[in-house]
Image 1: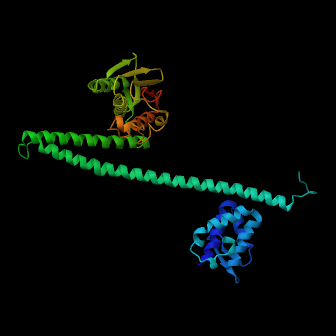
Image 2 (image 1 turned 90 degrees about the vertical axis):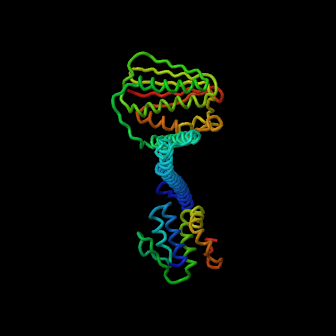
Image 3 (image 1 turned 180 degrees about the vertical axis):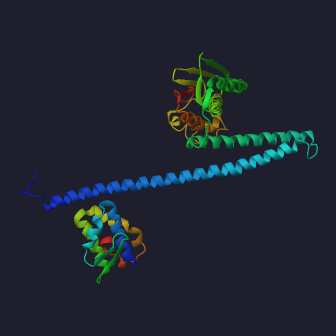
Length: 94
Length: 271
């Protein structure tokens, strides 16, 4: 599992704690992201820029729930982002 | 108010969802805090259980072994000891006995607090139990130079309970007052109503500050300056009293006007 896979799952699961299953259905609407198994928490990236998909996921929640949700996404993956080089980090999580 | 002709605007809709999100977020944060506190509490409880287990099996066991060695050496089975050695051995025996009593006191206090102390509840009479304890505690108080008064209402003190543990609880309560009363007197009163029996222990001792009152009946909960006055305090004596009294569906409490103004401890047990 790549670091960006882990980031996507961590964000969705953290949002799930706050908004419930809606977090998964909203994630399913993000182009470039496919939910494989909701119960196991499995997602895959379709072809494309994975960093940009993460940005779209963060924006999807942001669009509906505002800045607070953006902060939640960032906080959720802070420990993962800390181990990445700045170039690898999606802009929405910087 | 919105209606079908004037539906909620997207800005208003977003404001509502954002507000709901923030409220849910706050709930989740509180939940996480509670979860963390629960985990900390669980770990603290496990730590205490482990310590108690260690004390029971290792410290108490080692004291017991040492006590047996001193006792054996005093029997002359290993040769007649010189008188000076016998004095030392006797001192060793007494010291290990004291150590065992401390450990036993802490273990019983902890067991009583967690409800793990077994009780043998049966019909009993509180009067001879208190009288027996008072007799010994009076000697202790008077050796310390304190006046000791005991009074008791006439009548029936029969109830159902564990006479051994209740006697020990009464002894602990009076002992506590004597230990924290450098000069003056101890007044013990036994009284009863139709439905309850009440023991009062009043002293002219060091008193209790309001902040100490809250921790007095908790494990290790000595008063702030407790060890300056009673260097032998384990912090489990009153915990034991509370555990035993509550196991009898009774209550224990303390009244004091503050430091230096004495204390009054009360036990009330239904019957």
